[in-house]
Image 1 (cartoon, rainbow, N blue to C red):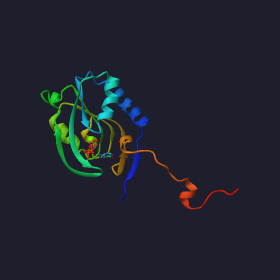
Image 2: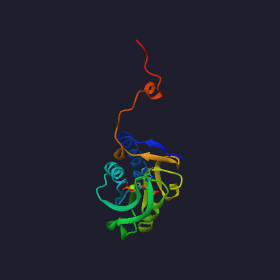
Image 3: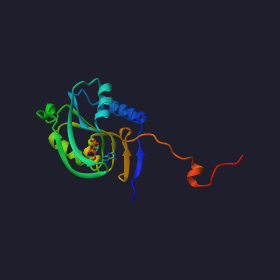
Image 4: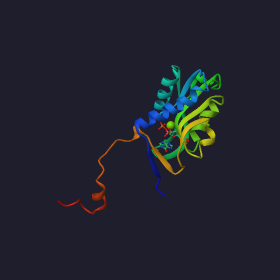
Length: 165
Ligand SMILES: O=P(O)(O)OC[C@H]1O[C@H](OP(=O)(O)OP(=O)(O)O)[C@H](O)[C@@H]1O
Ligand code: HPA
Ligand SMILES: [Mg+2]
């Protein structure tokens, strides 16, 4: 079955990122943040600004090639947070889908608080805090993966022409 799409604009991402920061500020203070690259980088920047957090580490896990899921590979470990096992650290990603990426990172930082902006049901048990849930068969389109384009008027797309003079 073709996936449904849920389009997220920059404005919406900023609003949802701030909503996440409101939840997380109550759980702090935080030693620092670990952004899961690349999707977690912009949500992490929004949350870091709101929480006045300046210590940002990254962890890189490659799981997907476009919409195809592969075997997760840790390309860069979250060095600064490893010794504490992530205690006091916020782990940020844009979304959890199957939870594959989350499980790999949580194994490295079992004491970190894991937060995402969006979550699908299969990945939900791996997240401590998230803002918006979408169904498992929905593909989230982020603003960095999309661009606005021309769309034909409804009447033309239906092939029933325009109104006459
Ligand atoms: O719960 P999962 O099924 O693991 O899917 C979620 C992960 O997939 C995407 O990252 P991706 O691997 O596409 O890399 P990217 O962040 O560099 O785009 C997304 O940013 C999450 O990190
Ligand atoms: O729904 C999604 N959107 C974008 N990237 C993703 N990576 C896993 N699931 C998704
Ligand atoms: Mg990612």
